Image 1: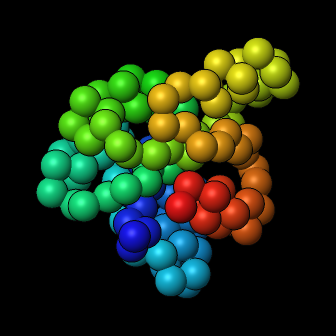
Image 2: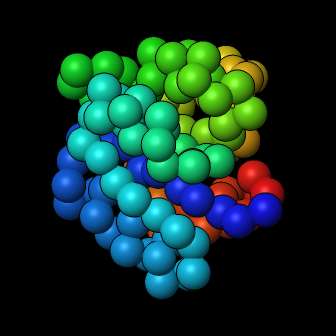
Image 3: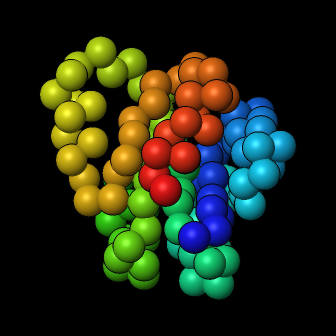
Length: 121
């Protein structure tokens, strides 16, 4: 299966390095600034994994995951968040959402993102 990743992150200084790093690692990757654009991209992009920021304007990451799975039920997700979440229960809750393969707290080394993407496949 060919890896095709969509990065849904509202902050360009965070989104762009993730997309570029994944491309450097030979992963087909694109980025969009919000969940609404992410849902549109899913309809035509052939993506099989989304890297999703939890806190975004327009549509938060949880709503995006729910709506994205309505479009493509087999889709997998890596959730990234800058939200101060030392709460293990919150991590566990997110990790149990259908399709979620990893939860990463920002800032994280880009290698961790690559590991999470590879884990999905």
